[in-house]
Image (cartoon, rainbow, N blue to C red; front, side):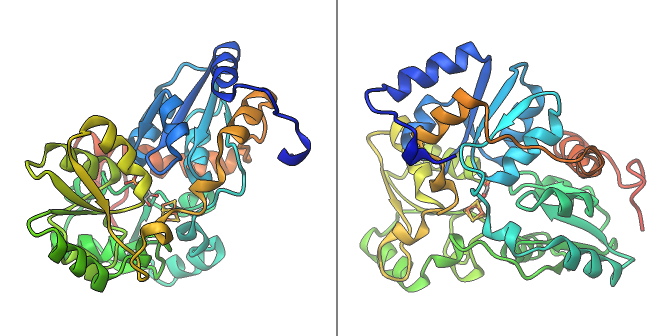
Amino acid sequence: MNIATTSLAGLDLKVEIDRLRKEKNAVILAHYYQAREIQDLADFVGDSLDLSRKAAATDADVIAFCGVRFMAEVAKILSPEKIVILPDMDAGCSLEDSCPPEEFRKFREAHPDHIALTYINCSAAVKALSDIIVTSSSAEAILKQIPMDQKIIFAPDKNLGAYFNRVLGRDMLLWPGACIVHEAFSETELLKLKAQYPGAPVAAHPECPPAILDHADQVGSTRAILEFALSSPSQTIIVATEPHIIHQMEKAAPHKKFIGAPGADGNCNCNMCPYMALNTLEKLYISLRDLQPRIEMPEDLRLAAKKPLDRMLAMASGTVGLGDLGLRR
Ligand code: 13P
Ligand code: SF4
């Protein structure tokens, strides 16, 4: 679909999106990294785990997913009877790109005594090759339910895996992927910022490299970072994740100052996720109007990818042993 050839002149997009949402019985789900105007009209804004739960529970006929493709795929995997639309099908993820399914399959075959714990930021094909999916907010609770002597492959984010190896004393075998956005933070510039705002705590996403996490007062998922920023007694908070999340912080605590951690040029613009930025209000309007582009996948792939996602949802909200899951190796 070519937006340039579609005349949207004179339309009040917010009013039109609202009209279409009701007409089509659609729910608009948005990640914290989406543009402010998309966050503001979404029915729900959340982290990857909360968005998965919402997608699984909604009774809407259409899920308009404002996030990246793997997130919309999760919505389709969990709610196959719904129409799932993504405003821009090119909204990928560098972590997904870093883990091609065929290479991951060979890696698994080379380590048959390991289970595969895989970050949700991956393709449906990689999910289908995995045992348990995790998000940054569910990984710790899930890892605590896995015996320490169980060998584990962690893919695709080496920083997230290294962080949990460190805090939980594990020795997971790490796939060498990384997020281009979180890798762009500069330790030198962060230290300069800390000197400028002495006492301001740093909240960081675990996708950041260890050199950034070493300076963090709090490490957690986007939701955990938001909760920390709002509950901290400090009036100034340094935020080391994609800066669009600051919109929610400023809405909830307008009296506080939230500063995005800088990249190497001292300007946090290099930490905007280029994939998330592909979704716009215009594309959301067109996707709701046309119910395109849709997430579709073969049923056998969906069922295979659903298994490790279901394990995540069970383990994230309760205690299910590996034995119960038939996963002990
Ligand atoms: P969360 O699960 O913390 O929302 O993270 C998703 C993501 O893509 C971070 O880059
Ligand atoms: Fe992927 Fe990084 Fe963008 Fe998150 S911020 S969607 S991990 S590229």
